[in-house]
Image 1 (spheres, rainbow, N blue to C red):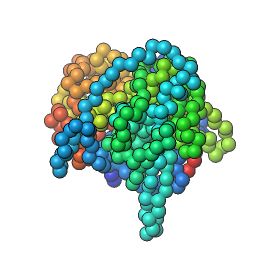
Image 2: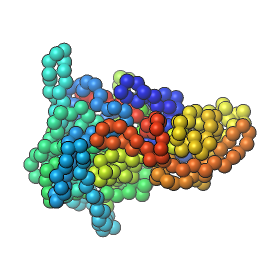
Image 3: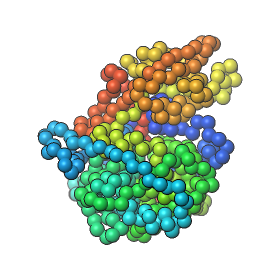
Image 4: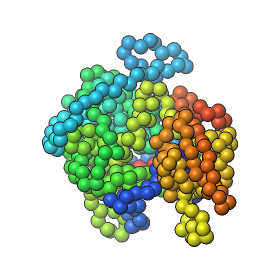
Length: 436
């Protein structure tokens, strides 16, 4: 869908924006990957709020918070106007043995944290402070922690509670609002980090467990279940969409930001939402959702190591070709509705009303297919596109660019010499409050 400015926020209108994390379902196999239909129910985020949060922090999607300078032991002092960076070293861990849920819990409960944030709002001239409770998990032994963006949104102070009973003040290192993730840092060493798995290896019916803090008071609870569906395109209560893992693990308020584990003890998702009953009184049980870890792994590493998020970018807005239009002889594909100036798409020769039917050898049946494909590319990748234009199929070669979201000054840059462009993410405003 097209993304347009609305004040300091982006909203989505008719068309998907290619190169986005607005990951539509696309061609989903029948194995549980069916788009959800309107059922009178809504999807809500599962942070626990004591009062309704007012306002929104985002300056558009994917902006990094970076409210405090970061450093690592042994690095030089950070000078004014500069940022220190951390180097990520990946270590392989043997996770070949399947564990029982009890073993997964024992191995990872010390990696699970509770997150409490203070939010100060100005209510009719009075400053009021409320608290939100959520979950998170430890990424590194030196104190990097992952949670949902909506857990820490608008926070003025963040406290992280460990399983051993200790608490630490946390700093926001960065966040990506459009993917609902945030990286925090506490001043601690020798922590027990989780092991990241591959969400792409999940199968419907596979057993999973979630560890978190439901209701903000039932701390370090485990719930177990199975993968109910993969790549489930979900419309959130704010009207935005995300592609999520669906699970029948009990996910409740306070579970936001917690880890979803497979039975090899690996994190495969980040719990962030659940279905909520509507006013019709229909009961909804055990329909929860988690962000696939593969979708955000690169973003997490970029926040920690570079202090900014880099995302692939081609610079087009696309929409689906409707069934009615196909009846007039047009093919399935991603129809180009807008081309950003000086973008990779413009340089390659893409035009408005082109229909992209194939990209990099992959069939494109709709806008979400193109969005997902570009999301998995890297800057510099070359794609050969098959494009339907005025009754003919033509071949166009395109070089993928990149979009950079800076943590230092909340501005964007591109490494393809684009000077103006829309941000290529599906930007969704999040609204939270109350227990749902």
